[in-house]
Image (cartoon, rainbow, N blue to C red):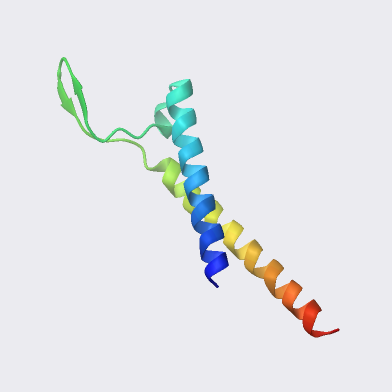
Length: 80
């Protein structure tokens, strides 16, 4: 159980950091996350949560795939 949680958490961190990094690298505002930015016109707060939503979806899929793989592995070990 803990391994599945750690795999999901690690995939969330990697995917969200990669998407936010690509947003800043390529200047793609949909993947940028800026909470506080001071400009000449004033202060802007905001940012996109799209990278985090996508990362949650990917970590769910990865966690489920890992859990199914573990169950198949455990079933195969008990049948010997």
